[in-house]
Image 1: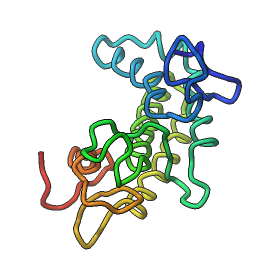
Image 2: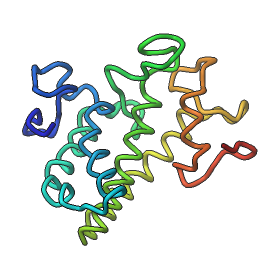
Image 3: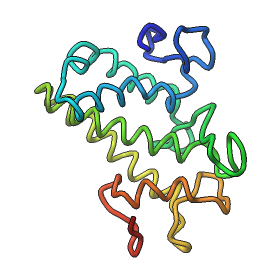
Length: 179
């Protein structure tokens, strides 16, 4: 995966690299963080953290720099979005809610990995960024009147976005919703 990474941290959606959507899909490229995370959780193996830490940090910096919406700080976009939406590849709700929720999870995992590697300054930085995303998600993607998460573009579809807070990913859940 990291063979597709450029000097700015952006990665292609597929490897080997053909520059297809290079840097435009943090959702797909986030596998570079999720795979080491699962290896650690399933096997207690930290070798991928240790080997690829700098590249994973570079990936998160690239996403933060190139995929964040300039008019909605803390919200991120993706070229591919949710393939499971009943509205097609990029549903009415837009790709931002999925991208931002996933990137929040990436940052939380990076903070945990930083703690495991005793990189305290990195852990604090990732937690700070995750907090900014959590607040942006509630500000831009939460409909208080209907008590649902939607996309930045309001639509009737909210099944996908609602799964994240139901599982407590944002440190608080929506009242009355359980899994």
